[in-house]
Amino acid sequence: MGAAAAAPIDAVELAQALIRRPSVTPLDEGAIDLLAQRLEALGFACHRLVFSEPGTDDVVNLYARLGTSGRNFCFAGHTDVVPSGAPQGWTVEPFSAAVKDGQIWGRGAVDMKGAIACFVAAVSRFLASRGGAFDGSLSLLITGDEEGISINGTKKVLSWLKERGETLDACIVGEPTNAAALGDMIKIGRRGSLTGTLTVQGTQGHTAYPHLADNPVHRIVAMLHALTAAPMDQGTAHFQPSTLQVSTIDVGNPASNVIPGEARAVFNIRFNDAWTSDTLRPWLTEKLDAVGGRYELKIHVSGESFVTPPGIVSEILTAAIAQRTGRTPDLSTTGGTSDARFIQAFCPTAEFGLVGLTMHKVDERVDLADIAALTDIYENVLDRYFARV
Image (tube, rainbow, N blue to C red):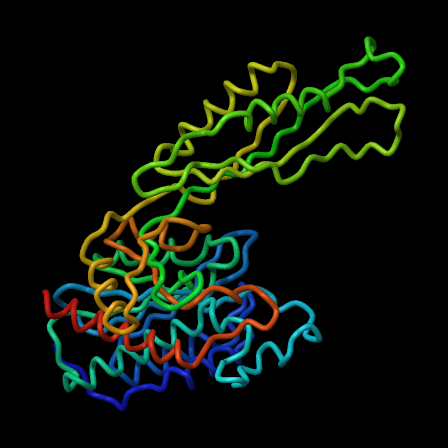
């Protein structure tokens, strides 16, 4: 298809402009409009999509597409960021996007406004190199609801696309996947996450007369031991072993001579593809029932495990990374969840972005050299992808 060729976009300048929008989730603060303006200048048709549900905040999202036919290659990411914390803890003002010591400093520099800027800059260079003409379509799916509850963001954009009859054929999510150096890791999947809130009921009483009471603390300790005594599994082909970690135990009893009437614990399971939330529920119930007594278990699942087996997206990314950095990245499924958990159901998906050492931290920052290199990698990916279709 053809598009009006425009001057290539400077990734550093765009990253700074995005960081200066204090888009702490679920706020937008003009970040989506800024992106839409830059993409419209490149010929993209931009759809600003606002979604909400009762009891939630409105969230601004963006779907931008260039082309109406052929295979559709998508870059996906989020403009919302976590809070910066106390500004006095920062070396620079957290939304100043200052350049210092060869780095851009500011909340979102790594996670993930820097990568979004690299997306757009790479697309602009790709179009310029071809005079605006190529065979296929390009799109960007950008949400403002990734760091928050993830209800009014990517998942709803994908449903909107499905209703329109639009498809995605390949996607790169620009999460900060690299552990130490640019090019050391691609994410091809993620573990699932299940949080359990366990409340054990007992009978309050005097510690000197335990036969007249039922101590829920003893039983909750036994229940948690039953859940953690043995490994859940040994891992699978693409995943580490699943883990169950107890994050808190609460009794709220200030008296040393009183047996409490209730005890509560919260645990989180990060599970691989040997499990689903549906198979974990009966496993948990069996373990807890074996201890016995009255209890209540509430479960929240923020995402199922998924993996995209090595294929076109990871292969092209690996080749582009090796050409630019000389590194061969690990294909990993470590870390938390991301919006790739939604996109992978629509098309082959991989995650690759900046180095995550400072994400969510005070003094979040990214090397200018990494911005340049990541832009080169994304452009190389586009060259390779559209050479194959």
